[in-house]
Amino acid sequence: MTSDDSQTKTIVRSAGTVSIAVFASRILGLIREQVFAAFFGAGFAYDAFVVAYRIPNLLRDLFAEGALSSAFVAVFTDYKTRKGPDATWKLANNVITATILIVGSITIIGAFFSEDIVSIIAPDFHLVPGKQDLTTFMTSIMFPFLLLVSLSAVAMGMLNTMGKFFVPSIASSFFNLGSIVSGVLLSFVAPEFGMHPIVGMAFGVVIGGFLQLVIQIPSLKNKGFKFKPYVNFSDNGLRRIFKLMVPAVIGLSATQVNVFINTFFASSCAQGSVSWLNYAFRIMMFPIGLVGVSLSIATMPVVSRHAAKGDIHLLKKAYVSSTVLSFLVSIPATFGLIFLSRPIIRVIFEHGNFNAVDTLNTASALTLYSIGLFAYASLKIIVPVFYSLNKTKYPVMGSFITIFLNVCIVMLTIKTYQHRAIALSTSLCIIVNFLFLSFMLYRQVDGYEAGYLLQCLVKIVPVSFVMGAGVYWVNGWCLHICGDMAFANLIALFAAIGAGIVFYGMVMSVLGIKEVTQIKDKIMSKVYRK
Image (cartoon, rainbow, N blue to C red):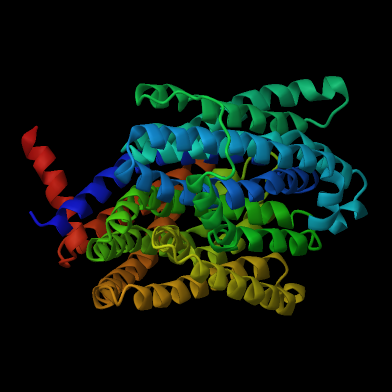
């Protein structure tokens, strides 16, 4: 077996492990959104919650699960490879203590200035009586979530670097489970204290964030880590992490910066627009989590190790294999979501206070978001490669391009297309960012197998389109046979998705893509072993 094949199988195995955990988390995440849809629908209360949650969540993606995680893994891997366990654990303690001090301060300041922040991100909420006050109150409640998830990101980075992927990936399931159970219970209690029921869900977010952190602590202890408060801001390792984080704050999170901008515009659209966009985005994040996030987590330690050793050849191989694996799942998912957007939204959300008008508006946003799904998943892979190479200026450049482009597109189209303009702009900007970074990476590493990537795309895209058209027909045929009832909608959707997976899997297995062959061989070896 060649080293190329070996590392591809390592990435596949690690990504598979992560995918199982992420799948559980995404299912619980969908259940969480279903609870919101059934209890609060799309409008006043959920609009307020989305904006309130988005403020600490935006900072989380900027400082925690985005910049801090990527920068920490790169430096932590280097220490583990070259400096031994004592220096590595000392760095970890320094990072954790610094995170508590810095992010803790941001949390306190953010909670104190919640009203001003809400006025900036959603200025038109004050036009609806009580909406801005409710948003401000929930923002102050949920700000501590930022500190909890930042510490969780550091723990995840440590465990991933040491080859442990399942526990940190399943940790987000505990966030969703904790936020659902505690949030629902507290939503019934909140009115007894004169608060809107949705405030209970805000407290649930903080409880879920706490569970996401503590579930990883036993695994860290088993690896020999003991937390000892220590901070030295002049430490070389910590300074390297900060140096990587500054451009990464912009580079890795261009989409999140655009989310902030889009929330500003969406708050001026019809009431419910923020909710429709959020529900649609949550559905799109399901395949992104299974593909982009899983492959990113599995690939990051591999490319960081190759970068630390100066082995650019294997780094390029790892990137290409990961990107092909991403295309293999994200592109058919794109066409599946485009063709089945309305049935998916109807089955998942159209219950309780979520009505048919909400389904129509959410589905139109999902269709447009899905156009950029493949690029979003691929960005999760390519951006950390730049960090491992210390070429952080290119993600920054891509970020500025997409932020500027997003503002231009939305301003030109929002009056005509309302919330749909935001979904379309998001997809176009993500695609532009991915193409720009792909070109720049090709130049920085003196080329990678771009021809092989294009060959794979030529095979994947037509098959995915046919699959998408096929699942649309299967869904319609099943509804014609079974009738348009709630249970029939569920059966029709599952039948369509099942038929699409079988068709796509059968066709792709004979098209000669190396990564598909390796996955097939691995599955068959396990079957025959049993």
